[in-house]
Length: 344
Image 1 (cartoon, one colour):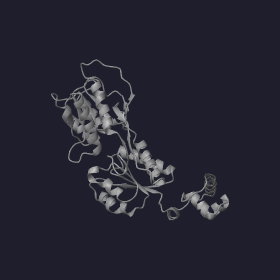
Image 2 (cartoon, rainbow, N blue to C red):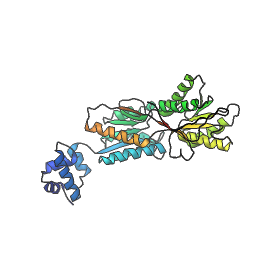
Image 3 (cartoon, rainbow, N blue to C red):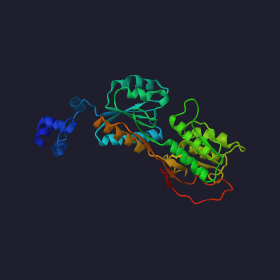
């Protein structure tokens, strides 16, 4: 197996220069660096993580903390993070910190304190739990995917804007009896609370009374709440804004089972552009979780390269994707519509 001395000899440089070129621990001209990298590749040389850590004081490992791994949004974000880190030669350690579990407590009280990483990416941590603040206090750079402004960098969808756009779409079609489905309760997530606020503010600005129907933020949760909501013929809305696509799809399934045609009698719009959205012809506000994950990883790596660069807050704008789950309410003439990007 080739060693650093073999790489140095092949590239006609000293071992110290070869080490600097491969670890990024000191200045080496781009021409020399390219020559060393080419020599290492031709010899099949791979620097050990321990050696790199000793030379640079860094592990080239990024910790990622998220509450769920199997759910669509989190899995997509993780894929984006991993792709970006691999491109830059970084490893990833995933901490599955499910809410209310002993494992989550151990992640924050034990594993993260060991600092076996150069930086952290936190996905979907709730500000009320002060967990993001605890991560920042560890002394490593932190970027948050989803969340309010903080000492950490933030990459997230502009949820207030997305909910406003979804609600304005329905109001523009002529709906006034519009319900917001999803979220609520004592432990309402920051994202759902923000989207509910965007809906409520838009309804009030239009002179229409908002109507929030709490539900679990899942397809079964949306289905169960929609069955109860739509089963009341006197109070039934003509349109629903789902806090996410899964809740909105649950509402569509409930409407179908109750014999309520979508969209002629009920319009439904979601937020996400979930992988199932096309299957249910769901009108939605599209976000890209993979892009958010990749952007967060790039932001963190930039901070590692340039420690004096301040952390940024990036709020991404959603795009309205029109499908066949929305239409004017009964009795209102139809209008021609098409997909449109969200205005800035």
